[in-house]
Length: 305
Image 1: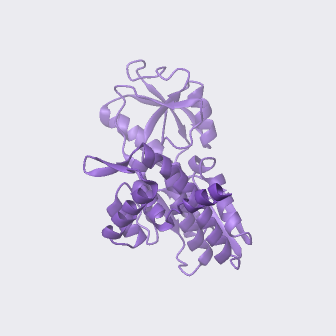
Image 2: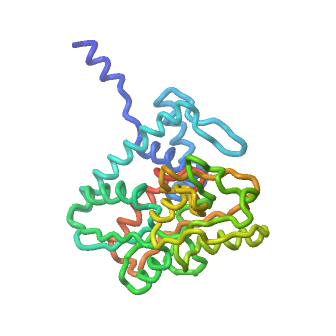
Image 3: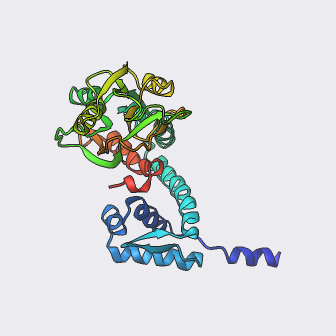
């Protein structure tokens, strides 16, 4: 009994604010950015990190170039920190958001349908059980048009170059060439005079980017397969009918990233969180906040802004 009492006396309660500083800094790629996002000074963030190292008795970060990256112990704590913060935030949202009720209409790209949507909706539903979410998976142009028409309240869409007053960039995602997993070298610039492409029906931003990139390089191409949906593009790519240009997010297991010499380099696409102009809508504010928190858990750290 005395031994058990002494064991509990030695237990340490990790500081939640310090854990949030650690997670935010590593997700943002900079603890200076973390200070800005959390509304704290850089010295306060440094104090948080020092406190965590004192509490755990381990070095959590090490220098890499001009920045800091987690040590092995830091990676381990980071995994637990995400789960602790998730439970903490869900508990607080549930307690504070009991009175939130109504309807919110969310629009997402097909790329995020399976990778992010399920997790996002589950968290939001637990925190705000009286709120009804109407989700729509659609292509970029439809999402922006529906938002402008007032048919959607919030969208997660690619930056189309059009300036919108309520849009904010939440990630910078690299584009890539994708081919069949079982034969990724089936189509290369050297293997065919006309490089076959599997694309979405026009108008499509990524289709335009692919064709323009190949034209700049002087690589002949042809549209080998056109589909109204992303699932059709994945099926055609997996079957070897052509290669596709998308992001690494949410592609089918039968499709893989091509690392083939001769294919043109591609730009980075900004991912935008855009909302209608009703800034007083607490439902939109709550869901937008959750999206900002959820995205870093599903995207590589270097894609953060």
